[in-house]
Amino acid sequence: MPSGIFISAESLRPDISFIRRAPIFLRSPMFMTELFYANRHVPATKTNRKQKSCPALAKSLIYKSMRIRTLIFIWIMILSPLAADALNVKEYTLENGLKVLIVEDHKAPTATFQVWYRVGSVKEKIGKTGLSHLLEHMMFKGTYKSGPKTFSQAIQRAGGTDNAFTTREYTAYFELLSSDRIGLPVEMEADRMRNLALTPASVLSERDVVMEERRLRYEDDPQNLVHEEVLAAAFKDHPYRWPVIGWMSDLKTLDPDDLIAHYNTYYAPNNAVIIVVGDVDSMDILSKIRSSFVKMEKGPAIKEAKAAEDRQYGEKRVYVKKEAELPYILSVYKVPSINDEDGFALEVLAGVLSGGKSSRIYNSLVYEKQLALSAWASFEGMHKDPFLFYAGATASHGRKIEEVENALLAEFEKMKKSEPSEREVQKAKNQIEASFIMEQDSIYMQARTIGTFEMIGGWGLIDKYLAGIRKVTPADVKRVAEKYLTEDRRTTGILIPVGNGEK
Image (cartoon, rainbow, N blue to C red; front, side, top):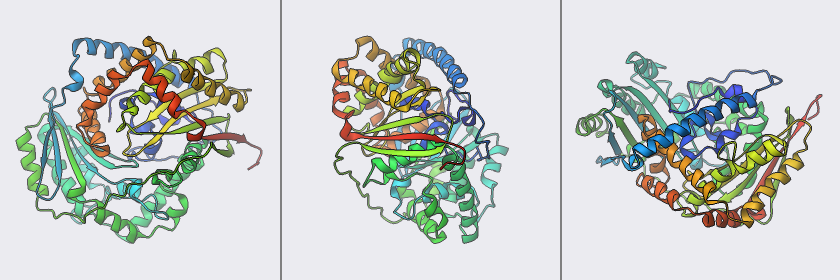
């Protein structure tokens, strides 16, 4: 699993969204909205809806851990100022279009083998949402050569671990094990790339599992439901508007043939990237990959459809009435992705607004005014197309959500009127770069970083990312706040708690 701070998702409910204010490289699949349902090894279980969470304790633990990690990060930066630029990626492409990226890291006798497919919810169509996520589930149900659960059992017997996750842009599968057993996942991933055993009965059975997963993590989680409704309202044209897990109405009417067609179209060598990081010899592992994959035929040519959003005229608002303990607000602003030069300044802006207890939003809304139990902001820039800048808060007991919203907007207006201090900007930049460097100590995160950038524009963007962050100035932060944190780019969702049977 990725390195970092992990607290049970259930222990943070219903207020887990503050995690999003961490820099990009601190976010794990377990805490990103689009990945909540992607972790196959964390089964959905029924929870007591009225059970009270303890977000304050969870936040306290996280902040204490982050303070310790920050000191470690700074020390690492002092000792290894060039560590972030040290990823030595070797790239190869087989005759059938399969791309292979290898990084030799001999610090420990372990390796990670990952297969990334260029397909996520954005490749789905109206009425057929949720196919990519359901297919991820089915990838563990066996092939014509091996039975159900055989894949994970074989990896575990070899002393390793495996998992997968689905996002809007891509689906990734990974194994982490001793480097002398790296040949095992190579053979097994090749088998399930084209030989998955998909029957109507097995597809519909797993579809029912996903439907229950959706009920528990959306219908039963008011804040996640707000996030889903806000995205659906924010995007009018782009497929970013539908959830990775799919709409319940689409899951209910799912045709197994559609899933089979989805698999045959997108799970092919010319639509995949293999990433290997660890104690391996590049030529040796490339030979193993070639032996298992090269005879595989290319899949059909995939036409990339670029979706664009029309101009938004004024703020959009969504109200969700749901059983909940406290009111909650989520505002999102349409912004460019990290592929745009403004993306770097937006990342730093999020750090200034929400990079720890001393950051502007948390300090103002939680400490000084005591309007909110949590308050955060986040730039979600790791997408191919323009996406969103998030800001959210959970109201304190006895406080009106209107007060919280006004205070949140006031902080944005302050940022737009005057430049943040050099100290604030440098602190945010240090946090982003330090977290990146710390992540590179994990072979899993090295591979995941490479994979993420490869999926949204090319792994070579990694160095550009850090260089872009380093160049951001206070004037840049003010400029992007003025340009993007505007009413005409905003969609706001309000959670209105109801009870006593009211709906």
